[in-house]
Length: 140
Image 1 (spheres, rainbow, N blue to C red):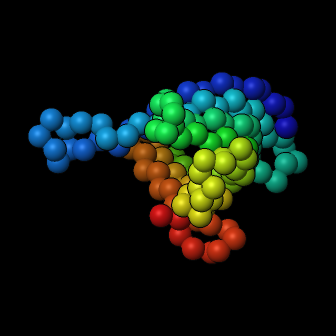
Image 2: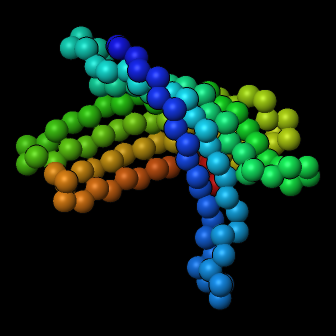
């Protein structure tokens, strides 16, 4: 596989749509540096992504939360007869340097099962389910 490093910045917010002023209740920022591997004909997977990620809420002191992870995401892609496509891309992650959040693995788990259906560009549906591999329980 050929590898291309890619930097990313994600922002996730919990938006309270039931409150009168519709405030954001919590926001986290994820800085990621990842590599993408492209498929060669003899590979058993279509692609893979791997890298490191730092996530924090951007606050300091007692209100600060941050974790660091390493991840790998193998990818399998299928083109269907009608032009639609299906992808299966499980995201496996390992936590490190998470002293302030020692229970993060129990809360989030170690793998996110991801499936995506693309109706030939007309619409796309993606499903994600977290799972703790050690305990076999859904991550809440």
